[in-house]
Length: 217
Image (tube, rainbow, N blue to C red; front, side):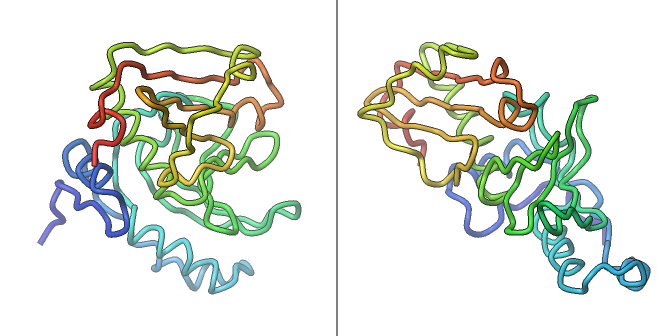
């Protein structure tokens, strides 16, 4: 029986993110990467790394989500592929092809972080769950905010985040979300760090949110 195109939000996500995956996502045909185990092991890839990529594929493989606010929209479809060894990083594997041509690819790091591989490895979120949570929160904030303001470069560094608390479910590493009394702020540092391009630093400020708009859970 073919797999249903309607995805099920994986366990462990917030209710907001689960609903986002199920309402906005599309499940495409999931590739079975375990069929490559013997070939990959023949190239010296450890069995544990192959299984790590396969576990990602079991949870996320074939899931297409709406475009992200930054990173030219994020991966077209979440999809693992052959693990790669990077002396300065360790074992990583691809997280899915880019939607457009970019100077970096999307990768899963040795500790499970979701990030971009540009001039150097830059983790964005501590896990793919965090990346999906950030997409869900951005979609929710856009829907309910009265105002949306985008700022770039040095103006981001001058923002006063006193009185804001970091949103934990997005598991921010380089990218973070902040919740205030009536606003949410997303800070996207990945391209600035990964491309050594401070002008790419960007923040989105979603204002005029009520309690539902701030949380959505």
